Image (cartoon, rainbow, N blue to C red; front, side):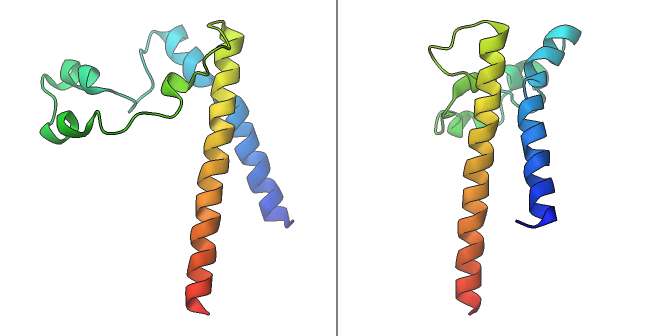
Length: 111
């Protein structure tokens, strides 16, 4: 493993561990939810209306881990933080795996 790869993995690990800040900071500062993670109801409150495309497609996709929570872990801050970290690690693994597969397909296509 190269130095770059080690540093990349370390950076991703640090970001995964810091991901619970997404539940701590908005709560501490009364900021509401995380920026950009708005559903149609929140958009309607912010804009006064829901864009047609969002209204039409909002029910098409459901999050694999809604609200970054894993059922059965509980509602405590420690359980929520653990769910956030697990969600971050799964996201990193899925995104990294997808990037790896696509890069292999591109390299194979160029050979």
